[in-house]
Length: 432
Ligand SMILES: [Zn+2]
Image (cartoon, rainbow, N blue to C red; front, side):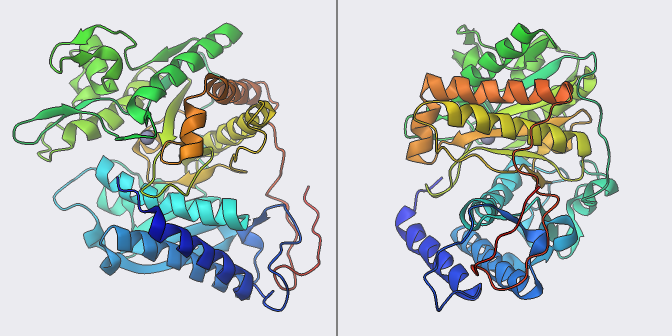
């Protein structure tokens, strides 16, 4: 991915200034009178219109960098679900693919990342769900094999399993080397290295320590679905520790092509990378896992976004509650670690539909985006064993205390009174 910070930074400043002006504080210094987030569901009509204008600017900015300004149709705020819905043209979707692939997921994730950065982090206007439609139709319309109609409903209310059942917790370290089906085929990593961090590799020690933490507590057994072995994986000539889950599962379960070779008829270059993503939830489903924790670092095509975020599949109740608990305890433990008192951790998880690892899972599944490898400060944290330990202790504690019925809610976002008056006026709101 490219780094184009020079063009990005002025635009952020423009957006922040614009927000101050359009929310009605032009005559005063643009100084917020509160530090607490406000839920987007609480914006009045004018504030909502202005907020949507800012979101549209963000989406169009990403599309411009992707060379796809033509794909923009609209952005709307569905206040009843605290949901931003982005409508793009259907030719934004890859041609000739029957399944929801990783390349499309990456492009959508870039848009989601900037929406969450601007709304939840910079403006502190909480968005709980981000969803996409294409010429007005949801992902379930275009990829019926991967999404049910219910997946298109942000409040489907599916419990989606009970974390805390007898099964094992699957800890899935993001990415790893895969066979790119170019001519000739080549083995390569899924992510580039930034600031000394390559996501495919750093997720391995993070996941290994998480499994150990879970096992030490004894609530569950937990397992990794990538190998930690330094021995050579013969087809690639690289150590097993660098190899993606798809090939480890192939080695362990040679007869289960339905898990690791789930796109046998696909012909695109990225088909084994797409199979890799799919193999993880398919395996967790197959063993009736107690949960699927996908450990990632976050990447972006500019260095601006940073911090810890957690995603679950929109509308799924148990994953949302697990994600909330995990994020809350990650914040507690990361910010208690010396040097990381101000490390940004999202206030709330975001319900999304653009993550195959979550959407294909029929067991409770969350994606932990530990920090941004594309931001130099976050990358330095990812390389620090103290940060690594704090982050994974937070994940473990979040899962454990969720199961024990002690979810932590430092900041309830479901009971915010309506705000009257212009943004930035001297008004306090009580949050319960
Ligand atoms: Zn990732």
